Image (cartoon, rainbow, N blue to C red):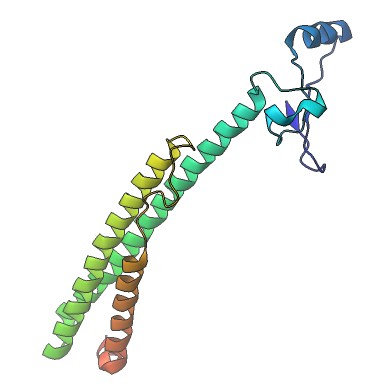
Length: 185
């Protein structure tokens, strides 16, 4: 089956067969009423195009394909959460290294505190990503009739505030004089 995506309504096309008599025999035995109906129409409302499609085979395959795409998108999102977690871990460990190498006691404690906050933010980011991945995976495995309006997903409000606060703290500490300490290295 091929799909022409450049027409206004995509339609399915039968694959070419070399012998015409074999094609006619195959079409007589294997086609159902309603084939050739646009792919994106509901099979029960296709009466004006030849009646309802029995089984809706191609449309079921398209729905399965959409569900597979949704699962793959969920996994890609989970991997983006993991990348963000590793970036935050890298920043936190870098700040901890600068704290150990700091010459003044005040900067040592500021950098240590900000590094710890970044690592806590990393832990929270990992857990938020894992919980959201699990919720979306659970939602994708349910029927559409069971789904509620909010679907029980974890909101990102607290995660956003934590990361934003941590980054602002890093900027303020750097602005307050950490630049001189860092530029001597």
